[in-house]
Amino acid sequence: MLLFKKKFLPAIRAGVKTQTIRLWSCRRMRPGQRSYIPGAGHIHVLAVEAIRLEDLDDADARPDGFDSAAALQNELRTLYAEQLEAGWQAYRIRFELVPREWRPQR
Image (cartoon, rainbow, N blue to C red):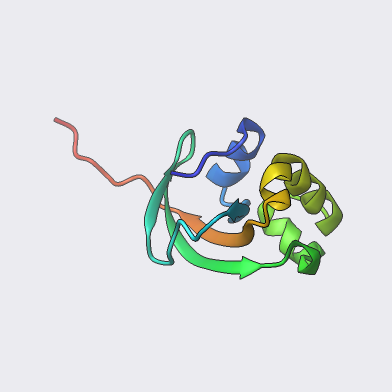
């Protein structure tokens, strides 16, 4: 399961936010995996890549819901201050929302 701040849920549901950056002590997701975002639904994980926060540019920030790399990096440093200090690895998770399955009426 991936948890997001409520402010990001409309963009996820609209298919605009298609990635997230997470800091983990070890990789927790794999490409091809299905996961769940409360308030948005199920997702299909397309890619999980180890990255360096310093290497993120503005093009990396947009699918994450940010206008610039500086804004994304600032948010990550705020959210993950302890993890950064502990030397945890940053991962870029690219995903797509899985459409709700059609269910016949009973």
